[in-house]
Image (cartoon, rainbow, N blue to C red; front, top):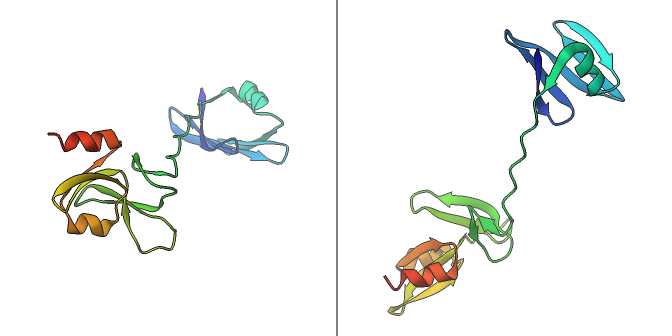
Amino acid sequence: MVLAKSVVKNKFWILRSESGKVGTVEAEGKGFKVNLNGTVNNFRTLRSAKEKIGIDFEPVPPTKSRQPQNHVNGYPTEGRAHNPVIDVRRKIPMFTKQSNSKSWYAAGWYVINQAGHWQPMLCPKKIILDRYPYQGPFYTKDQARESTHR
């Protein structure tokens, strides 16, 4: 039995057997070229290659859904997030609002102590977090509010 593992979806597969890599399958024009142990055969369909050679095509795993553009690492943002990164030291998801911006924002909800009281804030600027005590990030405003009652 020869197992075909997809490398490029619907275009290129690597053929393996118990002894290791034994060939490739490549989409070409209106057919498929199968190179197996140095012998090249052309087929019109993958089904015909599968039947004549005994190739078992591995199912392609579903692709991971992309993160929404208004989230960074699962935390909400105001609008589209550009240049998403994680501040590893403080464990804060960061982003800019424009691709060429130099102003950084923290994704998610935070509770910030300004003027002696704690207030929830969505996506504060990084400089606010540098200047004032804060708690966060939180996924929702309710989580942020609950943190001030502890």
